[in-house]
Image (cartoon, rainbow over all chains, first blue to last red; front, top):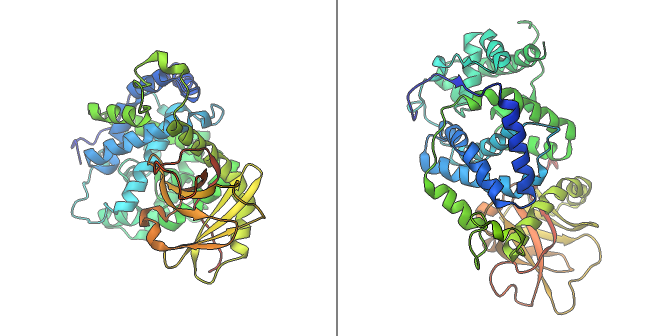
Length: 189
Length: 242
């Protein structure tokens, strides 16, 4: 674990919509091959994205390489961002996450239980501005919530979560499937 | 929610959580490339879970990260495009053009491949490894099928009756995202086998883009593609029951 603190504070504010619109405009300018727009996107998003990559990979050089790859991909695929379908932040962080997951898979890094930091238990998510997700996550039973956080935030696989929590694999899979179902229903309420 | 009846696993949700791994993930991504509804479900989950990513403490990157991005995107013969607003209207270098091409071909890939992948599956070669094929397509349709062999080589077969321009050859490149294209051989109007030793092992996997350019006999003198891609397609996993 690279920082040792478990708490997550969701900090994006109600100005989020405006920020998202600005990022969408920058992506459009990247699609038109405006390199200054890429720099602006980098300034806005790189620290957040590196935080996510570090949390998943726990290796700073690997996380920085993944960040670099992600920005190259963002530049090259900016014309494929569809404002109808998602938020620019979700799209950019998605690109980063899938590249980080590629790396986790290729290096099979999360393999030993002895190195697994046990931090997700402390992640009850204090979500100021994402109240819906916050309350929905907090409605999940503790074990389910922890499994979701260990997978999404920490990059653990089903079997790694099973090892880490000393829980049968089938139970972990069931918790995750039920968590997704519950979250979706809760967020649609 | 009921404790008695388990919900059907939400593959899009599992994918966004990062819990589809290996073959399961490759199969899902192949479906994703051709299924807009699935793509929307993935986007919806990415948005739903985004606050968890935004909650992770940000970390300032080293300066070298941006410098490296700049170096890779910069043309070799002028100032960085990212620093110089006056560079906005310059002509793209071949390298940028190549990468623009790759982006275009990746986009086309999903459509052309969905239609054409059956061709590769319907004609499996005896030595074909289970399930990795690329369909190299032009804008007009499939031109070559490439199937990975169990020995690491590639079976390459033309789909129709075409030839390279007179006095030129088709050079085959393997392209990993963000990396320089690697020349792995040539393709011709006849079926051929590319031996394994010509193909680096890390370029024999899903999502590597196979691309063809028209080059002088002997291949590109610079060792990098000098002309636009004429046909291309990504390596994709296929369930062929093999």
